[in-house]
Amino acid sequence: MEISHILVPTDFSPFSDLALEHAASLAEKFGAKITILHVLTLAEVNALTSQPGNPWENIVLKIQNNMREEFEKNAGNYSIVEEPVLEVAVGEPAEEIAKFAEENGVNLIVMGTHGRTGLASIFLGSVTIGVIKKTCLPIMVVKCAESLK
Ligand code: ATP
Ligand code: MN
Image (cartoon, rainbow, N blue to C red; front, top):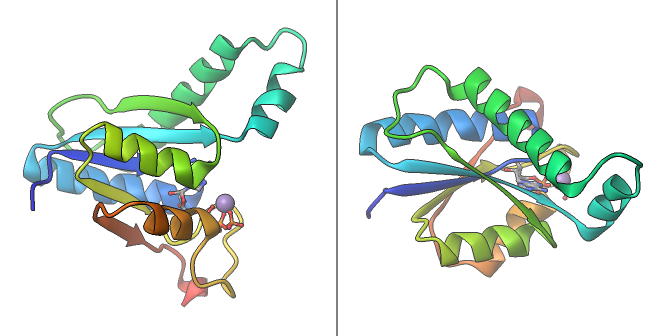
């Protein structure tokens, strides 16, 4: 198995914090590059762009800043070959994550078992289930909370 391009889909939850740390640790070992991807639904985009003085470019810049911060905070102490690439996509999250991975030569996806909802009674979050269904690429699923055991 080659690990040269790792995709970390983030929803800025503690689970994606942990996914970033694992991804950076692997990227350091394998000399891989990392892409971080956040997907906004069309409804989220419409709500955000309908606010006055909030053009799309600003929204993307803000999300990229959040990604940079999340990466620095959780994975900043790993030495990786290049700065992570920061991507924002619009659509159905699982579909966009799988599509991005397949179209961009990703060979490992690292993501959380859960995300912002984080319900312990649910085995896996719907985005993770969707990605597993939609791609044949290897996926590393990480879990952070004791409370989810
Ligand atoms: P649900 O959304 O089904 O109520 P949840 O929020 O607990 O449950 P998921 O949304 O499936 O669980 O989150 C699992 C993982 O999927 C997260 O840790 C993150 O890696 C990724 N993820 C979730 N939402 C997005 C998103 N909008 N963009 C990119 N990655 C996401
Ligand atoms: Mn979610």
